[in-house]
Structure formats: C-alpha cells, structure tokens
Length: 168
Image (cartoon, rainbow, N blue to C red; front, side):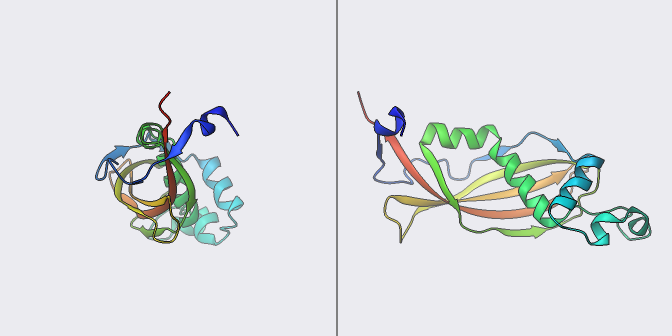
C-alpha cells in the first residue's frame, strides 16, 4: 500500500461534480498491414473475411476486415490513453475497479491502413445500488476513420471508486 492510499478517504457522493456530458478526442491511430494481420491472428479471428486478401478483393468491401473484438479493444485503448481519461482519474480521484459490459454497434468496416480517432463522452454517472462507496460511469465512444465514417459506437459502463485527499 502506498502513502498516497493511506492519505485518502472515500468520497461520500461518488458522482458529485463529475463532468457529465464532456467529450474528449483521442489521438489518431493507424492500423498498419502487419499489425492488422497480427491482431486478427492473435484474436483467433481466422475467418477468410479477416485473413484472405484475394477473396476479399472480390467482396463488396474490397479488402479484409478488422475483427470486431479487436476494434472494441483499440477504441477502449485510445480512450484510456487520452487526456480526458487522465483528467477524470487525476482531477476527480477516480479509480476504475471493473468493466461491467459493452454495447457495441459496428457501423462500417475497418480496413488495413485505416486511421481511427475516438470521441468519448462521459454519458452518465450514478452510485452503485449494490456496492456502497462505488459508482458506475458510462462512457459513450464514437470511433471514426480518416474518411470521417463512423465505424463503431459503443457504451461502456465501468465500476469505479472515488477518493479525496485528506487535508493535511
């Protein structure tokens, strides 16, 4: 246990003052050819939709598709490395305990070489009904590619705890 943890106390109202409705934009991330292949393979997304370039050249997409689970991981990762995510953690004393679920809607394909950005909105916050002292934040992500096409919309409720520094 660190000294910082010893000097903190739980916040009574875990949702007080949180920036509900605020939106942040991640940095851009290009999914290169090698990375695209490796990510699909490591996730066992071995369908020819994801692995057979020759077959997919004849498809409506004209190229292989990034697997959905990989896209959701990239979107979550882009948000987790954003300034907005760091701000929620540092300025508001948030510590994430667990991801509770994901509701993902895939809107357009992600192809090798696409660059993605994620706009994430802190959609809501509430105290947990079953876990006193904890709360649930819901982030709403909208991922776009370099053509400004929405490729994914996703809601991610996360269980969190919140602490305030003890006054010295």
